[in-house]
Structure formats: structure tokens, C-alpha cells
Image (cartoon, rainbow, N blue to C red; front, side):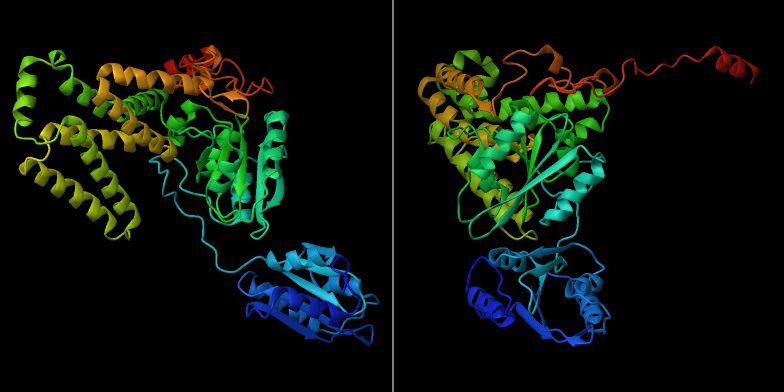
Length: 505
């Protein structure tokens, strides 16, 4: 049988499908013979159980079972399917993919084309509250694993015909749907084309999560810093699209990718735009400060207590010396043991069932820390430093940026234990040079600091009021930068008529 053209013989087509799909119990094949124009028609339908809506299928079968006066088989099929989404295919490979994608395929004896109708259903996870990026004020909905649901969530946020979706399929075996979303007129066409080109160049067996896509298309291959953002919040993706970013939606995962993004965007939370600008600015200062603390605090403590004791006040120096008098380990090894212990506790809390995971984290941190101090294995000051470092690491809203800090912290601790503060500087300079040289889809990673773009400073460390951010960030291009009318600063002065009315009252 020709693997490209659908055979007019229904028996041959059914046998070919059976040979391709095997005897899988979830593949349902049903045949029946309705009367069409006083003639018996032989019809067979194919679908995969669990991927379709059984109620819609029952309605379709009831409609097909009724006697029809249609004079043509195609007209009869269209009349039996008032639900829409009806397509015709005349290639066997397309027929097979339609079945695997969860569509109902209808084949009629004597026709060299098949009909496919979308009846997506089965068990799906409903739209729930985000679990990894929570906010106090803001939308409480998150993406799901369903492809169409995620696109619908974006449509509800951005109701404009300029919102475009370009779909493709990646993965030889998984045949995963991947969609590129952008706003025409705001996003740079060159960036959209580059993202699409990189996606289409992927040749692999499987795509099971957006993390696969991220590693295939990112610029910085050998870097701990993330160059593509992932989020499960539709409002965060909508905000990125309105600033000219490109979103990548992957079927089967609730995490959507955003590109190109800069270093500073990983410190911004969606809630920053729902709170007052002064509160948001204060929270951002805390996040950037926490980043510095999580990266450098253990290293600075090791360097000062090991090589630069003269920098400490006398009282603090005597207190630290008394704590370390009975401690058998040097400061570097002591910090390494504590950091590794905390990483083990953190990983155990994440992998254990939710009912006992938090309990393990709390008990492990409190009991082990207190027992280690009482046993004289570590000093109390080191426990405080490691604990405060871990808490600061949790402040970062992007998990992938927090993971990069955790990796770099160990390298800086080794340098601090070897060369003191000079070792820390010797580690920070290459990191800074690496950040300056890093790019994401042709955009400098440290923009707008390097190169300096003063127009983008209104939404960096400090967030200016909404009425003052008249233009979009100048990151990708100068396309459609104006997003709101000028002179929208709130004015508390009453007009003359309002003043007269107020005085009369």
C-alpha cells in the first residue's frame, strides 16, 4: 500500500493503520453502515481512548446513525459534524498523526480522503494558582499542561488581532507542539525570525518539557547564568509580549519561555507592577541586596576570619576567636560542610512528599545546626552566616538565577579560603567580564547598564510610577515604543466649576 496516498479501499486503509499502531488497547476502531441517499455507506472511525471528549463523540455517532437524504457522502459527513473543526486529509502520514494527536478520523469506503475532527478531551489539569511564582496581589491563575488552554489564557490577557501564534512540531517520537507567540508591530521581526529559525533547526527524538527547548536555543552555552526566562504566570508572559519579547509555548508543560531577557529581568516580580512604585522599588532593592549577600557573604566571612582579622572590631574578633577555639575544622572546610549539608536538606525537602517535606527541612536545619554547635564541630557564627545566606537566596524570584548563585558561591568560597579578599576580587572580575560579554539573541545581557541606556533606567532597580513610563524599554528595537499618552500625572487641583460647587456645599 502506498504510504502517501489514502487508498479508496477501506479494508486496506484499516489494515495499514492496524499495522502502524499495533494492537494497542487504547486505539478504538468502530465501523457502521448508515443509509445515505438510499444507499448503504461503509464508514469507519478511529480515535484514541482518553484523548477525546466522549460526549461530543456520542452526539456525532447518534447523528451518523440517523437516515440522511444527502446526495453526496461529503455533504453527509459535514451535516453530521456541526461541531466544526472539520478537516480533510489525503495522505496516510497525516491521517496517522491526526489519530495520535487526539482527533477523531472518519474514513468512508470509496473515498480517497479522510475526515478529521477535533474533539479534544480526556483528563486535564484545570487552571490553578501558581506554585513556583506566588504573589500577594495579582492574578491567581497559572498555565497548565494543555497547549490550547495556555494560548487561550494569553488571548484573555491581550485582546488584539496583533497577537500572533506560529505553531510547529518538534521531536521525531513525541511530535511535541511548540508555538511562538509575539505581538506584531511591537516585537522585532528579526528576533522573531531568529527564534523560529533556532526552533526549526532542532532535530531530536523527544521534547518533554520547555527545558529541552531552552538548552537547544540559548546563546550562553557555557554559563551558569540563565539567558531565557521561564514562567508559569500568564500575566508575566503578557507583560513581556507587550514589551517586545517573544514567548515559546510547549505542549505538555506549564512553563512558558520568554526571550530575549536581560540579567536584571530575573529580579523583577509580576507583583512589582501591581504594588505602588515606592513599595516595588523597596522590594527590588531588597532582592538585589539579597543577591549580593547570597553570592558573597560566606566568602567574605571566610576571608576576613582567615586572613584579614585586623578588619574586625576588637570585641567581635574576641567573640569569634572564642567560638572557634574548640572548632577542629578551618573556616573554609567548616563553611563547605555547612553549605553542602544545607543543600542536602533543601533537596530532601523538595523531593519528599509534600506532607513531610517541610517538616524535614525545618527539623534538619534546626536540629542539625544546634547539634553541630553543641558538639563543637562548627561555630555559631558560621551557622548564622550560612542560614542568612540561604534565606537571601530564597528571596530571588527566578529559581534558575538562584541556582546560578549557589554554584558560583562555592567557587568564591574556594578563592576566599586560598587568597582572602584578593581571591574574591580575582573571582568577581571574570564573572563581571563574562556578564558583559554575554548576549541573548543579539541583545547585551547587562543592558541597560552595559551599554548604558538612560531611557531604560525607569524600570530597573527603582520602578518609576506608571504615568512616567510613557515608552517601552529600548531593548530590542525602536518599533512602537510609545505605550501611553503624555501628561497623565495625577492632578489633585479642582477645576473652577468644581471649586464653586465645593464652596457652595
